Image (cartoon, rainbow, N blue to C red):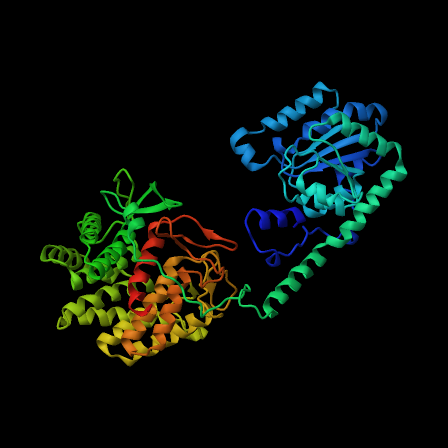
Length: 593
């Protein structure tokens, strides 16, 4: 936003100069402001106003202006210094209102109560514009030179104030060519002399105000917005292999498979739910559905690597699963770090556990693990009748699918699979009067697992009905998640209800994993290799083929960040996100070369 910043980028960070475009900080168009005097301004209609606004903190140097006032008001008693804005929330958090109290006491000590007004509020843009248009002078008395951009300074210029500032980086550039005046850091004597000279000479004051206002007209939001649009058009149009366009053919260098972060989140009890950045968060405790899915990951990793450390993890997650089973066969889901069980259960936790147990029964590395998994699995089956949500059906179908791959002649389990698949189909048919090819009235989370479950049910049972509904629901999901040439997930800020608007942020790894599972299941059921391409594309979401073009994989921690927000990624690396990444990686691995 200014020339010095360009020098830093080129000189310090070695950014090629041709990659940098300067577009100044934008400002409102004061020409559009209809004159409106708010109550505070009505009281000050006969005063000369010096204004400072913004979040308040010691670095703002407001005491410099207050110390300058006695010399100013002796010559110009009509002066009122208005300090508008709340204390910076970070300052409040660590120091309370100590700085504001200090300023108010300084005002009393200097007998300036009739010449200083604190407005301890967040001003609306309309209020702020009105204050700036009414102010005669504006002061930014910051104490530190290292401020590359100041929005308050830009606003003051555009509002037509005579601006006086200490010589921090942005002020030196923006106030050049007589658009404002500079005084030394902390020099209230110099500041008072400069303000008195301006107030003594209304012609010079008006000329300074007009020069500032004229420059502000060149940086209105409308003009700055057009500058950005022109830049985007230029980038899109230039025939340059180094431009900023997506290159969906660019080969991703996938890192080696690594369980480091999963091990970091696992203690002697089990897998902790959350992390702050990559550091385990003990306060969040443990949950069954994370440990159950981690059981799938650790066993899959052992199948891939034959690493005995994977079996150590697998045994820990299985032990946790066994401990969380109630006497009636159902499961509790949450345990505090102090090992207190919370009295709760859910379709999600139950279904994910059935999925994990079925997978373990199919691929058990030894007899002892197999028999324990089978015992827990069979004790829980009576609760299949208590399921009521589509995801519960889908997760349990995945578990029964793996069980039947181990025991294909078990008629009882064939009937259970058919019953759950039919119930999932009934959920779908209930939405048909709305012409909505989905299992609920909204698309929320873990969406890909529901069509995935029906593809696997079709593979086992051969019902054309299952394949038809799996295809129709997949097509609807794809119409929302592949609007571009990359996977764009439905965000968890606001889910999609029928055809109503929704938010694409915050996107979560669990949903990308569900898409990977969907395409693996569709490929298994149909043999259509187009699903392999979609599987790879869904997995590449983790490595930057997403709406922000940012990888969620952290090469330092070997973990996966928790999701995509509007302007960045969530830097926490909790259990669910890492399970989602690792399981997606294990599924996608055969198709990445």
